Image (cartoon, rainbow over all chains, first blue to last red; front, side):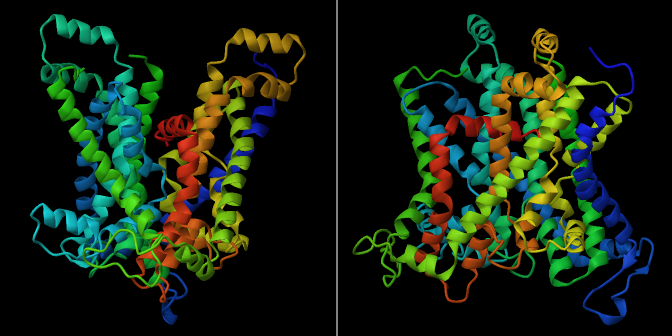
Length: 296
Length: 277
């Protein structure tokens, strides 16, 4: 079956993929590492030509209070959206797993935001967040909210407003992974639990949650990877403001490169972002390999 | 599993789900409603739903202020182009990895998987330089080219190809199939559902992408819907004309929602697969 003499064909077949991966993943990664060792700013004449400064870009960034603020915002964004979204997705999946009248419709209603572009989801929410007569404020005021109305321009609420949009958009997406996971749990497990006299809450804690451990790990990693790259809704809703209170890593990277024209700093942030993402993507990859490898 | 067979529980279940559904659909439905308001009737406290009459003026105005038709065509060309090229690169590479053993195979596979470990979104700054150097800035090709190779697709299709029964392949070989006949007559027909899932995840990913197209385009001739919509929302003359903004948003999401409602099952499958990314 497998050819024994040297066969150039497989190399030929993978060469297009190799070419594009080299050109747009491997080369730019090395280019960023290289450029991060140089000071280069396109808008300042004497810094236009790159000059080697070793690791100074990294040291400067770690001392930069703007950058620390951005890291803080990013952590708030990631840690504030990921666990809550996953918990909601889990609960919705459990509620919607049973077939009953309208269950398909409920699933659709919760899943549909996942297919929308983030920018149009954000545009819809920009309108929803309108001060005074916006439905968001009208509704929460009706429920007793008396705080500030203008969410997207309020220093304390801007970041939360983009987090709300992300929650709304992703809960349904993560839900379908849980639904798929729940369907893989054999019905006999539940019958056994019922015979043992376990109630619904006990069944949930003792059976459903542990058996969905793998789904949870998987969803958690894709959620983290997504959250670190989330930026589109920030462009629409807050532009990182007010006074950088909703600026996250990828937005900051864009600002440094395309507004401040600071090539060296942008390359350094790229390297840092790659390191963070690598951590999560490698764990994601290991998890999905494991998932493919065994069938329990 | 929690069973909601008692009527009290069932009532509670419906209450929760109906509340969630209202919360989840309200932003979209409100946009739809607002987009039908006549342009000169501003929204105000207590008057937030339909205007005095239904009107499509805001759609007309939105279309006159920005070339949404052009953006739509650009996006369409983009997603078709990316998927068409990916289909070729992915099928060939997945076939090679599934069918042949060759020197350096594992190493080369890992090399390709690097693309799944370092998301292209993080590399927009250096890729911007590459696009400038290639002299294709501000073209649809520039938006799509970083994605022409797809590690995710290779990974997915290789898994699928490996599960094809050996007997089927042997039969093809006995019939005298060359490698590409094997691919076309045996591997591809066996993998249609996986290819469809990959296609949906690829198309919706590139349909929705924003930041890369934003930085790599400058003019309406290449700008896709996402970048076009954001540019529209930031135009000076738009201000807080919500009917107009809503109309623009509806123009962007309506085709997507229609496609989704028709191909729900495929969409969900595609999204389930896209998680591996």
